[in-house]
Length: 252
Image (cartoon, rainbow, N blue to C red; front, side):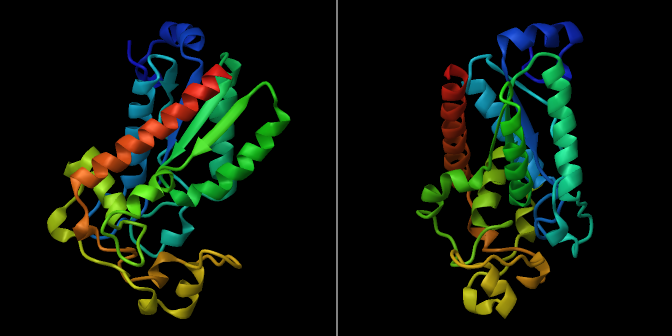
């Protein structure tokens, strides 16, 4: 039987509540990823990780259909980007969780491929503390393997549509990467205008800017350096780490 809720019959879903008590919800975004990578990148990465994590949990998790839109106002300068407000994004997830909770599921793990969703997910997780009968956890992908990225050949400025994200896509969905169209974006701090540079500070006050403020292509780093082998290491390690968390959660 498939572990994907969308591919189950209603009878199989009823049985899965008992057999697979954890629901994994992949969430992504519809937003620009430079001139050489698909706008579905964040959703593709989230669904890919969901598949790998569920596979490591030996039938104890089901995968909900992905939420394909996210909180992306910082990419709206680029054609094709679609954004939800944080409130709408949270409402969609609340309704998904409430529906599945009504059917008997009690544990939920959101895997987000888009960092712009993090703040909304963090607030939502706080809300669920008032529903002690329900467990709501969430995780990003790339920050989980920052230790490995530090050992890669990456630019001083890197991140969105850069080396690490492109590497993950070369491993998970190489057909969605047009290698001949990849081009570097902002790679050095001294290339950035003042507000963009302030937004990259690791400590201190926080400032949000649109990605067109970083570079005309909205890219951070040099995706041409990415390799599928680096992507394999990042993706499989992230899957191991998320699965280890989920395994402990299921045993709690």
